[in-house]
Image (cartoon, rainbow, N blue to C red; front, side, top):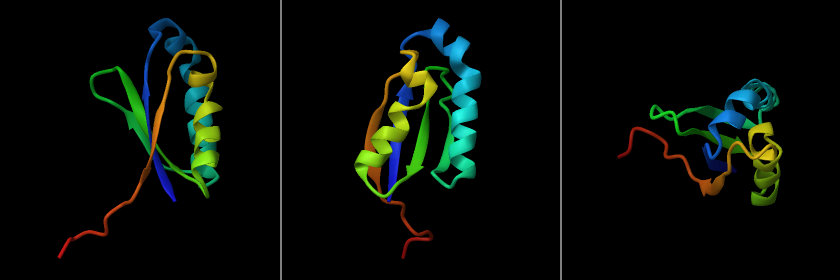
Length: 89
């Protein structure tokens, strides 16, 4: 299953400080097949991660263990997501 997390920045200073650890964490999970896609919002106010997990609870744990979340730089909102097969008919 796939889960989309919106990760808004709530503390810009902490975010700048912990961004390298956040990016390392995202990259590690991507290489493990636990992230389908990730990237920043163009307004600079946060980003989005699409987790691949067996359950909502697993996805919550993945999001909660992001260094940006653990340090209080960001928070998250998580929703189960169903990708469409394109093109639609």
